[in-house]
Image (cartoon, rainbow, N blue to C red; front, side, top):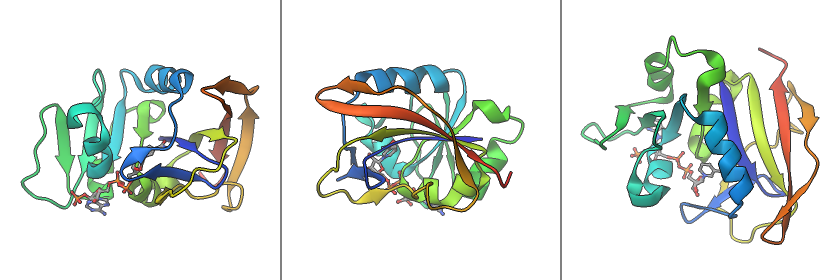
Length: 165
Ligand SMILES: NC(=O)c1ccc[n+]([C@@H]2O[C@H](COP(=O)([O-])OP(=O)(O)OC[C@H]3O[C@@H](n4cnc5c(N)ncnc54)[C@H](OP(=O)(O)O)[C@@H]3O)[C@@H](O)[C@H]2O)c1
């Protein structure tokens, strides 16, 4: 299983249930990596998508406490553990934890890889964060892409691996 995320210099990921940055090339990469696979996400992240709709051409497993939550095209489960059960049998490289903060926190330790887009900027007023993998025991950088600049922002794709798995 992989995590995929965009972070700022302080590992912030969101504000007011929205993303911090608009990075078209990063979005295309996210789409091409996850397309055809299974994504695991929290109910708030689902609500942040356009129209609150699940991501097309992917199996969407949504975690919520709400027993009667339903959304067309989404599979609803009641905990991170239930999400993993639902995804059992999915090839590990096609299983993606896509946020938000609470779901990353719950499932990161079970991810083998984290694809982290690191933006050279500090977003103001962020209220959701990803764990700082440079300080988390067991995580190591495997590769770093050359920098890209878009919308006045410079960013790089970091591949981290979980050496504990
Ligand atoms: N930068 C990025 O790459 C990235 C990616 C994804 C999201 N984000 C951002 O992250 C922020 C959202 O993160 P978040 O932490 O607020 O929300 P979230 O993780 O997307 O969703 C939280 C919701 O998931 C459900 N949930 C979480 N843990 C659960 C558990 N143990 N059992 C049952 N249900 C559980 C609950 O839903 P109910 O309230 O329905 O019970 C909870 O309110 C937004 O700003 C979003 O834009 C950023």
